Image (tube, rainbow, N blue to C red; front, side, top):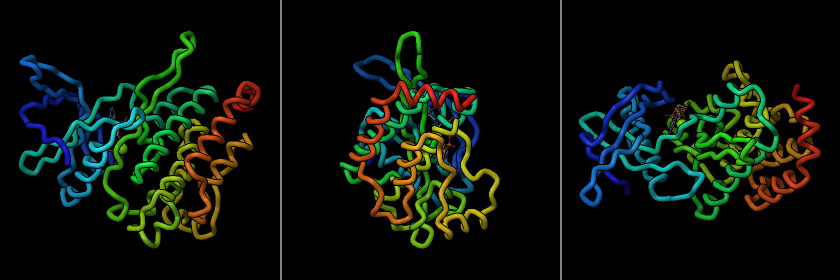
Length: 284
Ligand code: ATP
Ligand code: MG
C-alpha cells in the first residue's frame, strides 16, 4: 500500500532530534526519472528500535498518508526497510512544527492564526469526506511550509503530518487534552468525532501562541480534568472560544460537522478587521 524506497537511494543528513517513537533526520532521496538523476530533500523518520514492536502501526500511518493527497496533508514518499530499520520517507517541510514556530515568534497576527485554522479545517473536511480518521491532530503535527510575507500580502501554508503510532499503543493519559475523552475507556473506538475534539484543542493551541495546554499537569490531574468534564481556559475572543467548546464537547455526537466548522471560521474572517484589531491590543 506504499512505495518501497531502496535504502541505498537515501542519503542521511543532520539529526533533527526525537519524535515520540522515532529518530528524525534531514536527508535526500535519489531517483532516476527519464534517465536523469533527481535529488529531493526529505524528512526521514526512523522508528526507534526500542519501539520496533510498533512497526505495524508505524507503517499504517505511512500507508494512510500515501493513499491520500491534499495540499494541506504531508506527502509521504514511501518507506524503506533495512534489517531492523524501519524508515518513513516524507517531504521536508522548511519551517518545522507549528507549536515551536508560534513559541519562537512572539506575536503572530490573528488573521494569520485564522488562516492556519481554516487550512486545518479544510484538511479535516477532506478526511471526513473520505471517512478517514487521522487520530493525532495537534499543533506539533502541523508543519509550516511557508511563513507569510506581510509586504506581499501572502498567507502561511501548513501541512498536517502523519499520525504516528496509533492511540491504543500509547500512554493515552499523556495525550490529554488532545485525545477525545471517550477514548480513555475505549481507545480502539477512534472515530471522526475524535478528530473534531483534537481539532478544537489544536485551535486552542494556535490561538494561545503554541503554548502547551495543561503543561506540567501530572497524569492523575489530567485524568481528573476529563472525569469532571472540564474545559480549557477560554480565549478572550468569544466566537472562537465558542467554536473550541463545540469541538471539545464531551458528548461526541454533539461536535459540529466540518461544514459547520468552516462556516464559523469563515464568518470570523469576514468580520475580521474589527476583531483582529481588538485582539491584538489585548495580547500586548
Ligand atoms: P509523533 O508521532 O508523536 O508525532 P514524530 O516522530 O512525528 O512523533 P514530532 O515530535 O511530531 O515527531 O516531530 C519532531 C520534530 O520534527 C518537529 O518538531 C518538527 O519540527 C520536525 N518535523 C517533523 N516532520 C517534519 C517534516 N516533514 N519536515 C521538516 N521537519 C519536520
Ligand atoms: Mg509528528
